[in-house]
Length: 520
Image (cartoon, rainbow, N blue to C red; front, top):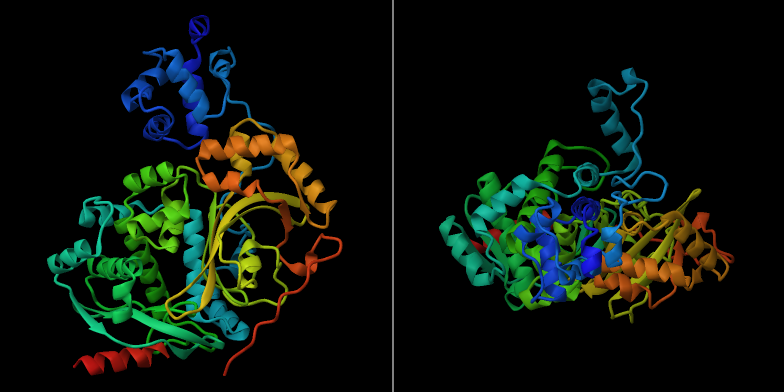
């Protein structure tokens, strides 16, 4: 190794280039090295000196760096200073493809103010649905990074991790909030175009009362999230009460009073409530899972969702925060209710939406992991899946981790978090397009499911190790699947079976009023 070390003139620039290509900080690299070998692991300052050429790493440190990035140690020592990447298309930028707003005279502010309400009315889209679509697009554009909300949460929680229920109660007292408990079982209410079993968990009553259902006492993970979100409302908005109630079941959990919740249309409060709900939800995640300590936690646990149970964190909170704190940017997240309604969506990796406008469509692809689990009541174990998504002429490649659970109203639903593997493969110097094409051919030759060829397995394992996401390797234990945005465009032979159509049905606001009245 001593002879190799003498060939280290370009090691610093290569290390820096590789680290940047994988979106890792020096702290991240140091933490990963500690995981592999705590005794020989370099400090952040030592890694910084390696990057700047002020230090030459020992053979042990070089081997650690090689293990983290899945390279041969000699790779760092050759005279090629570039991290080569295969030619290919642009990396995903999050969300759906953009459209040009042309001709410009048809897309003026005045024109849109007149046309959008008409569009919503004619399509039956509620103002709240449209507001959430706008917010989702905003999230995807910003890669789910909102440093101002992160800072607000960290100032309140002092980056304490983990936070317990008692810690949140203490913060409530500091901010003049009172908790009022009520006891109310689940009940059926109208939600958009259907009747659903709903459990009202909690809500904020201005100026400083938070009403919490007794049922949350036995579920500290869910209780912590609700308390943290309402605290966020007090901190961010002064506790004026202008936000939705928290309810399990349904798509949103209540509407602004006087808004057009069922028929299509738009109300200014729709946007206000939707945006505040998002801000409070993001604040809650940042308070319970501060960015730096939670990132270190995820790295220690290999991004296993079940690890959240150790800290009384719900799977939904763990999954959502992954998309915000990971150094890797290409994530998606779904929370789906049968037969195919979405409660939450995030698409920072450009994955096509598998159904329409927060409601059920007639032809979803049943091979998506969320649908696969939704329609199999006995699928109790979490599963990891590698998917080739056929979208027109494109073949996209994703890995997701999904689990089936029940909300507090008893409704089954599926949570799924996933990544686009193509940028990770490219950052490691693999020909991602060739790998994806080979896997797609193997799947199409076997009725839509196929074993991944050996070279593909090695590349995916390598990318998964660099990302430190353990469920990428878990997914290799099962065949890859072909999926598509719509079952009517299914490339399989024979085509997939159709999912059952959604049933239409004949207010959470009234429930809230009754609880407050009973409290006096």
